[in-house]
Picture 1 (cartoon, rainbow, N blue to C red):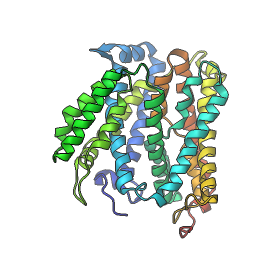
Picture 2 (cartoon, rainbow, N blue to C red):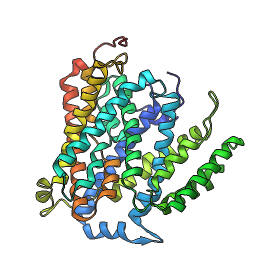
Picture 3 (cartoon, one colour):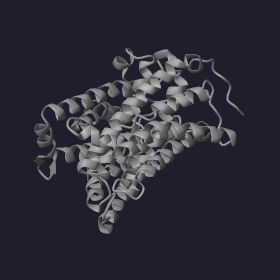
Picture 4 (tube, helix red, strand yellow):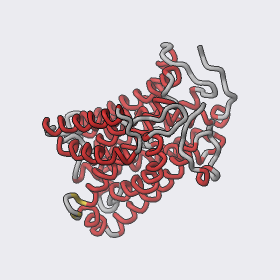
Length: 398
């Protein structure tokens, strides 16, 4: 597979070779994400007043947490958009035959968790959070598989990558459509006008990434004022940017190379630090155990993800809608489906859009517990099914 990818040789040297340096960067950033989440939990429980004050204090027009969630996370979603575009144009999703299985499996991994959450919260105050358990955290999940080394075949890791990319597409659509409010038509028209400017810049041959900085900022501002969550501006801009012809690098490739380390090692850990802190003392855990929101998020991610991904993959294969790739088996897909229950970053992000106060705390606890359980279960299943995960490659099914 001839792919342009991030050049991270210093990082890649210390990781199991799986043929994709992009995944290696995700793996190491996953470790930074876990460290930041742990620090947030310690901070929120040792000095809760300091934690709350730090992230709710106003810094200009926004609070500290809003700067992270609305501004910096727009850059994160911009890079996600670049990754999606790369996968669609030249990666695992570039071939309909290769993309069919992870795409259909990802669809099941979004629908079933949402239904599981809704079953717990139908008609209740927590019903709005149905989108929380739909997401898979690429960095965290790939980090878990990387820790297992040769027990997991490279094909299984690439399947998880493709699955998570499609998952991101679904999460972006859900955020744009269902978690935007009071949409202002004039600002939305202005945002469309900025998009047109970017398209015209492409037509006139603008290729340097810096040329798109001002339109990008203008698009973010217009989308923010339109009432659509501003992070969507990053995804839209990423899809509008030109790619390089043939092996040449265009703005998409240059920006992904430049920004991906910043999002992986700075922005996402900072997001975890700002949002993963939740008090676990007193009655918080006791309340969460009986909260439909916590139970819906936790079972949606741990049970719904595994069931949805595996079930839809089986259906796709039985109906002939997809073919299982060389080197992959249903045993590997089932194990990957468990690890896909690690929601974390985007799940916490949707939780922030869904709730406030106690419901938000309950949702966060659900995400944290589910991500930990999914990671541990995934490791146990892979180790227990060593023969299945390490079986010899098979030919594609016609």
